[in-house]
Length: 432
Figure (cartoon, rainbow, N blue to C red):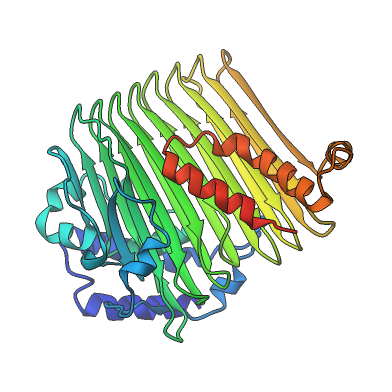
């Protein structure tokens, strides 16, 4: 179906390509040409060895409509986290101002829609957009770059510590046609700035659609960005999301990925520690059932000396579901004194659930401290017996042990309303 996207782009470009500044169209054309050359990835590609995207590649997804009707505040409230959040809502990839809450944004902070920023703030976009998330070797990023039109732009000025979390809620709706959206988010944290950004992907109903999302983050010297990505799409949907960051000296990128939705999902979290003293903390939890397929790929590139990284991903898999974790820590020759730890732990709740895990270290420096490891196992029979011998029913005991496995990584979430919501979702996910 590569040709279908090329035709869609021709129509898109003929209609103005979503409009925008003069420098944008050449980027779009370069990206679609690269997608045409690459095609969709196959299992022959090492990074996609355990994930086949044929359900996406062999199906026609029509561009999402510019306007979606029938979404109410009540639909948004289901996925919101209460008061105190700056919230931008997007329906089928398009900004919905009537459903959003952008009141009270403090001085020094810009939170707005990308479609409007093309017109009003192109100078903010040009130095960063399509500069962080490379598309030369990434088919889905190339496709997003070609079609990017709407999404979010967040800019935190120097020395500003934003104490209100920003929630970007991307909702998909059903209209009887399989749709595709390409939301694009740009986050720029200037020197010594700090902010928390939550991206939520969800649906109204059980529609079949494709979300192809890309987020670019720039962390200047001393900046701290906490980024949470919550993928709770329709069980009939497909989701490919990439978060890519570039970090300067003494910056800290804190990432959490939560994935429970979609028939097939892939989440890429990449960062380059390009300044001495910078660090990355990447945590995640994925939970699957039925025939779901969930794939996480992470890459932490230590490019300068005295950098650190910590990574813990956990998976809980039931039914006939399939999980994939491919994590790489890459240490350049000049990145002496690197301190990196990576861990992936998986819990299989059924005989037919399976996981492929491949933590990797590529080290080209000789003065480093790096460790990595992975585990795959089932619930501890001895622990189950202990709980049942003290009057706890078998089903309740299994639920408590499963939750305890996930709790350690959930506790790393500092935003309390989000943590409580995900803890409740975890408890409800596997109720035997």
